[in-house]
Length: 135
Image (cartoon, rainbow, N blue to C red):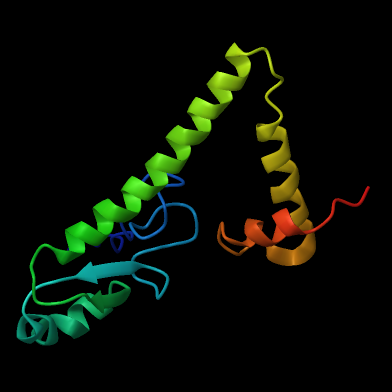
């Protein structure tokens, strides 16, 4: 008889945004894993316990496309912000302006971590924008 190791929880590339089980703290098989479900409520209820074993499940409604819509909408926002930042950086460089924004963002992230917010999500940086810099 051959014994095999238990399968590992699926993971995705680092920094993929969280819900898919990436290396940024979200893992399938834990409450941090996020699963969006859409379709008939009866189907969801019939499989809720199985889906719940994979993570925190949210039923979005009867329309089968809602889970995909939420996923694409979130990814669209993420890529829009990243691309806008990259374009802004390129424009500043083209104009001969020193691109300070990356250093500013790094400094703000360091301040948030030093203030004990290292395990929190990106919106904590909003608070850092409103705090005066102290040397």
